[in-house]
Length: 320
Image (cartoon, rainbow, N blue to C red; front, top):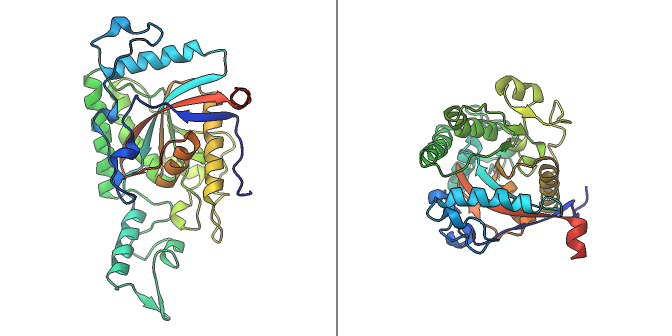
């Protein structure tokens, strides 16, 4: 795979002024976003939008928005333009996150373990092992803190549901890495049970983290995913073993952005759902923001944001 950015089936863009600008909330490059109240939906009037929703004054902002996005898609059903509200969730804290923080703090304190005259930091040693004899971080599991973070997101959904506001996703997608599979289950299973719906997330290979030579980026087998998450729907063409992870090569940022473009092309081409959810990873969120042209920001573990995305068939967009 080359490093050049490739054109996709769709040209994607984010639609501003419906949600807070997340990039303006964080304070500097090292700051990370946490979940905003009501996901940052803006209080606004929908008057003037084709005369639609004039009878809905006083209804919750989420109820108005849900009705608006469904109407918007109906208006554009024949012109190659579509819109989706995407709930994007960064998985809860994993054991690899804990290990990286421990090593970072040790390095800053000058206390890294030295072997053969070399410091055993994350990049040149620990990241290429499956564990340290105490914990395993290959296809990293959630730690207790990460489990609690995911349960807090589920609580947010349940509380919002009581207000008849935050609309449920029509389709839920998840990365195949265990920390995302489990986060998806912890977040959505109680919510779907409350609404009498079956939790059947779709496992998408291209939702996985940027593929580096770190073992935490290596996924488990298809059989293991099916055994541990029997209700999950694994997309077609999903290999039994991880054919993408290599011990001596890493995916470039450009390659990751291209893969994320392919992911969105696939979803928008085959899923008419106007409201979807994606459970994924920090670097994948960065690639996603690049594809839709959203200013970069970083998210804490166990955080959810709402992105309003427009897709135009590439041929149409280039002709305009």
